[in-house]
Image (cartoon, rainbow, N blue to C red; front, side, top):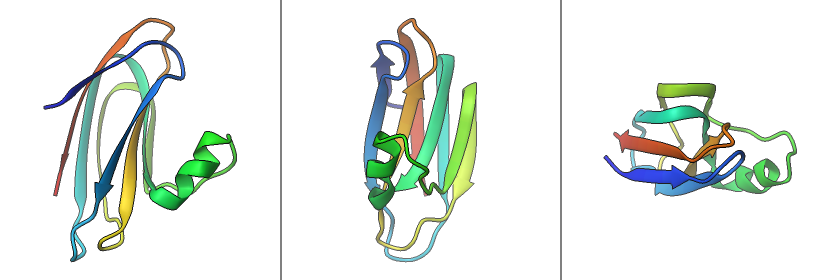
Length: 99
């Protein structure tokens, strides 16, 4: 399972994926040693996310240390998994994406 280190509050990691050709459900698992927010959003929504505007996302899971969810992106669509720190201290994050 890949590992990332987030340096402080609002630091994030963005992981770009492409959904398979046929419709399948994606399973996301994120574990952190401090609270993080997790978003699965289509590529086109990233700019709104960055600017603090309302944005569409497939799933979001907020202010927790352990996150597990499933969602179904559009076939062949590119989407981001964004993991954002809620802590002022460095945060270790483990993540796994399967379909």
